[in-house]
Image (cartoon, rainbow, N blue to C red; front, side, top):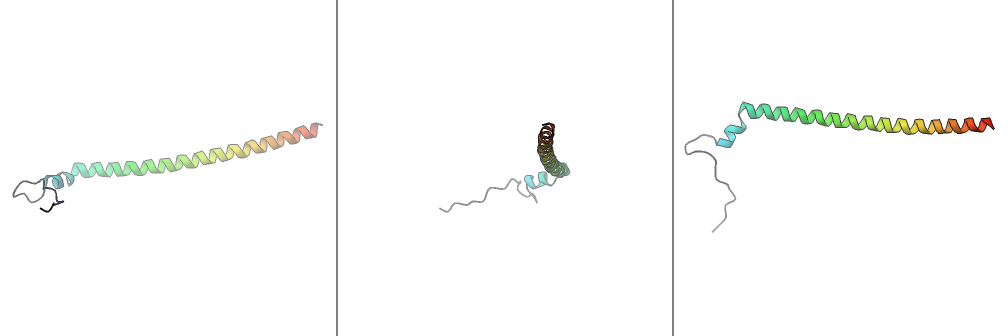
Length: 80
């Protein structure tokens, strides 16, 4: 006996489309899908800009610390 990988339909006999197709094509589901898609897009942009800001802050603080330590060392050298 051959096994069929096809699942049974969720539609009633005589119906033109299945219940799952009717639910997924409803306006509420479509607007929810759009809302989730736009929220994901905003989250991606926020994560990218937060990462950029963190990189800029770390680079600036590292460079400013190095500059400050060099200038402080130079000042101490001049005091002698």
